[in-house]
Image (tube, rainbow, N blue to C red; front, side, top):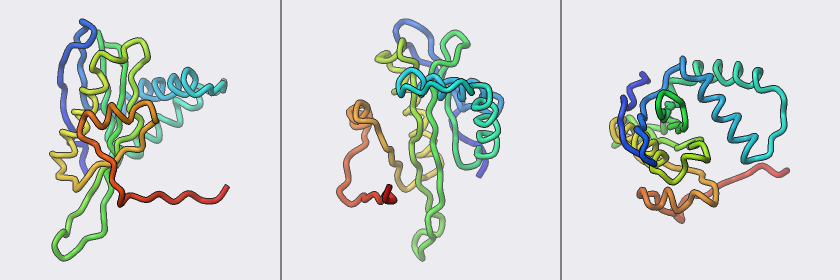
Length: 168
């Protein structure tokens, strides 16, 4: 799969010009920085290995660009948000020989800019790409706080989805 997802888009949030665009391997350190920030500020991670994580994240991103499509949001050239669309192939059937689905992963906007529409623009870029790639469906495993955000954008609960977890 080639990296064909959405190019740049612009909107306004909290009075600032916001650009959402497809991210590249060159953006991986900034995306890794956002991932680090989320885990330290919101999840209580206290590690001191930020540089090691950014290096690992940069390599991981480059190795996964065919299946994990990153998007980033910028305000005045500063990266302030990200979203990822994981794309996977499904088993072919006689009536659907090329079947793929997507999963929204790691949507994040820096806390000081939340509520201004940046997350919505990021998600719209993800879903526009899902449409462009003709994905059968897109899933998301959301935090409890973000469920309504996804519901407002067309995601719905489906009683046919089940989840298995290994025993601890």
